[in-house]
Length: 362
Image (cartoon, rainbow, N blue to C red; front, side, top):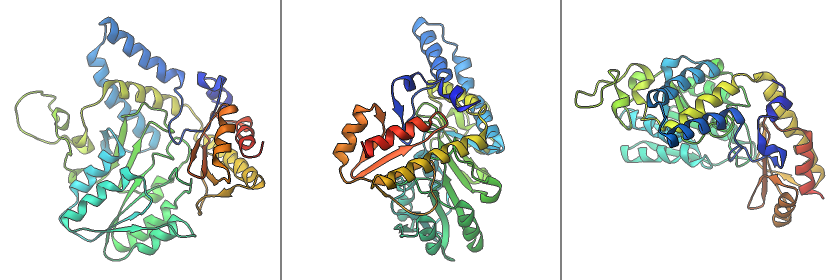
């Protein structure tokens, strides 16, 4: 599928420039059509609850195939916070240090802070001028039990070197928790090289899913304890009474699915699987590079350091003026404090770059 063909699936793009996918994208037609069909059937009393119930396990298979991981290693959860909290609650009694960035997204920060009550030492690592990768590497030592990191944070768009972190954690026998929420769907980390012990993705950003559909991937599933045990945590499909016997694989940590979220997620992953992954990454990085270069010419100062990604944040001298020009130009992007943040998906094009740069230098 070409970028133009993909763009045609987003009606919202006919009237505006969308550079706010780091927050949330507009809905693509195959996903909204699946949701409209379900809501209409619900409204009319024609809903097939059994079919709705199958959407989540079907999305597990689609996601596993898309990411190239075994389906048995995939748990269905509702958020990255739930995924991280599940892992945190399953770690053994106090054993070493948890290393996490001081500016890490709170869903991948706060669950680890709860481990202080179990006598884990939490090291919150401030970013250095050299970037997050170097900061985290410097904090890893023989006492480290786990490193938690997002490949990309929307605060500045820096892409962490996951392979380097994997090598460092291997050296000291630590585990690696990776959040791919701001990169899955665009970037292609080498998961064979990174081998994350735990990988979490919330699908409502670059994977185009409704909010509420997320995945936890781990080969250590036999160690996991369900954070929210329910009828979905067992293999027999029963509803009442009985004993808690965990399901095989990571499915033991499945939580009761929000039907509409997973109906939309299944359609979204099926759509994403049709895209040429290498071309998507190259397309998005090329647009981001063009904006990055143009913003420097307009006098904006890049935020962050390290390896760039498809998300760009720049410091602007007059944020209110930039916000007004974005509004006038019908450009959907975020001005956060003195930073303008933009993100480029496969549906974006060079005209979108020009529109964003016009908001910086009219």
